[in-house]
Image 1 (tube, rainbow, N blue to C red):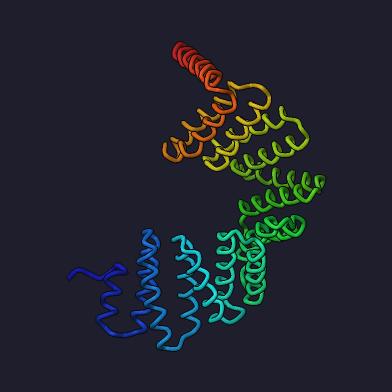
Image 2 (cartoon, rainbow, N blue to C red):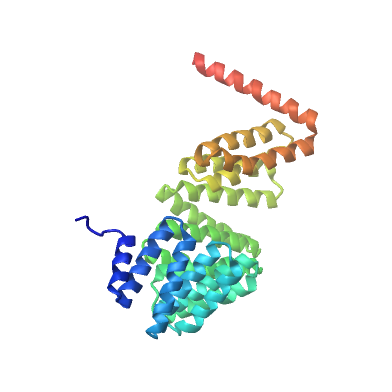
Amino acid sequence: MKPHNNTADLLALARQSKDLDAVAIALTKHADTLVKEGKLSEARSLLEEEILLHQKKMREYDEARCTQFVATLCRLEGNIDDAYKWAMRAKQLAGHSNPVIVAAETELGEISFARGDSVSAVTAFGNAINEGLSAGLLPEAQAVLRRKYALALSSIGNFTRAASELAIAGEQFLEAGNVTEAIRSKIEEAAALQSAGDYVFAKRIHDIAKHMAVQEEDHKAIADLHLFIATQAIQRHDLAAALDSAIEARTESLLAIAPDSYIAAACAISDLADRLGDRLVAYEALVVGWATLGDLSGNDVAKALFSPKLLALVKSWGDKEFRKIKAEYEEKRKFELSASVYN
C-alpha cells in the first residue's frame, strides 16, 4: 500500500479521522506546501478554514497566528485592504510580548509601505521592535526589523534616526555571525548619514563597510559601495569620477551576478556618459545592459527595464542622431569581433 507522505494526503487522512486538532495541524502543513508552490489563494482558503477550527476551540493565540498568515497572503496577492483587516484582527488577538504580535505589527508595517503610508510604517515597525524586545527576539531577527524601521524612517526624512537604527542592526548581525547582512546595514547607514548631511561620518562608515566587503570578497557589497561613491561624486559635480565609480560598480556586480546592482550601474553609466557628451558610451551601456540582463533574467525583463531608457535617448538626441550613434556602435562591435577572431 502506498504510504501517505505528502501534505495533501495527510490532510485527507486528518479529515477522515474527524480529529479537529489533527485537521488544524494538517491544514497548516498543506498551506505551507501550497505557498511554496505559489498557490497563495488556495493556501489562504485552508488557513481561513483553520481559523474557524481554532475559534471553536477558543484558542486565540493559534487563531492569531493563522490570521496573521492570511494577512500576509492577502498582501502578496495585492489585496491590501483585506490584508489590513486581517492584520488588525491578528494584532487584537495576539496580546503582547510574543512572536505573533511581532509578526502582526511587522505585517502592518509592510501593508503601510504598500499603501504609501510611511508614517504608519514607522509606527508599526517601531511597535514590532518593542514587542520583539519584550518577547526575547533573537538579535538577528531584531536586526531585520531595525532595517525595515530605518527604511520607514528614511521615507519620512528622519535620516539621523535611521542611521542610528542601522548602526545597531549592523552590530546585531555581527553578533549573530551574519557578516553579509552586517555589511549591507553599514552601506545603508552610510547612505542615511549622507542624506542627513553628515558627510564626514558617512565616509567613515563607508570605509568600514568597504574594508569588511573586501575581506569577505563580497562583490555585490563592493558594487553597491562604488554606486555610493558615484552618488557622492555627482553631489560634488565631479561627473568623471562618478562615471569611473559606476563602471567599477558594473564590473563588481557582474562578478557577484547581482542583477539589481548591475541595472543601477549600467543606467548610471549611460546617464553620466550622456551628460559628459560621450553618446557612444551612453548608448553602449544600455545595449550591453539589455543583452547581459537578458542572459541573467530573460529578455522580457531586460526589455521592460532598458527599452524605456533607449527610447528616452531617442527623444533626447533625436532620431537621426540616435541612428548615427547606433551605427557607430555596430561598426565598433564588428571591428572588435573581427579582431578577436585573429587574436
